[in-house]
Image (cartoon, rainbow, N blue to C red):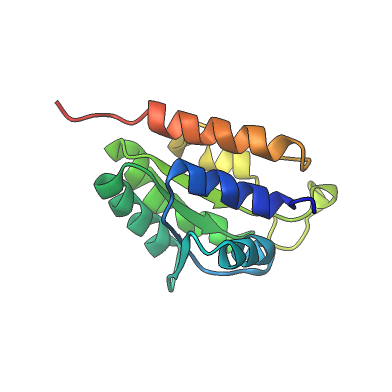
Length: 155
């Protein structure tokens, strides 16, 4: 049986050592949340606000070396930014899984559409949009490698 994109992503996160994902479940994250639940190797930590999730992931990364948060379309994206800036400026590796509207809707004024590339560019070492299922495994691997490689070690 073929794995869907969310299942492939969860498998990569497990291999990278992710133990928890801090997030608020939103419509565009449903498949990912379901894949996390079915896999059972990662704990989905439901937070009241995406910003709290990003800050929690930054603290987790400080303690464990790599952590993950997630945000859904529109407000979920925007709320992640403060915590991601904190992680980025502190030099701790945090992966942010950011779901969005269907790519066919880009540029149409779709409900809760944000320009994720612009939004996260200044607080990311790797910031890409997977437009096809084929791209995601390679991009997720690159994101993990960038997060770990760019980690600033205290001297």
